[in-house]
Length: 70
Picture 1 (cartoon, rainbow, N blue to C red):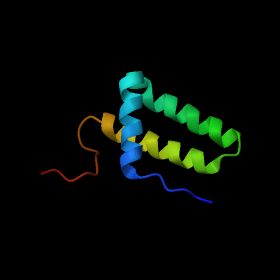
Picture 2: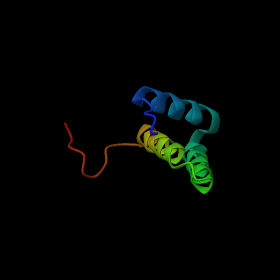
Picture 3: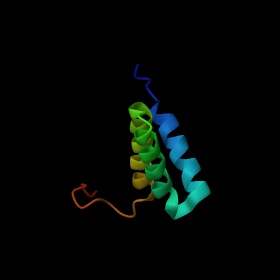
């Protein structure tokens, strides 16, 4: 059974990890995703991959190369 984690919860988790781990937040989240996958928890791994993406987006400096500029 796939449980949906809200975008708000993903962003909250990302923010908390950034506050706790700073520049290492994404690394910590990737490690957690890998741990869950190794245990066979694919759903948990998917959630943590979403958190990784949110952390990367939050910590990104400047627009992406393909992002339109105003």
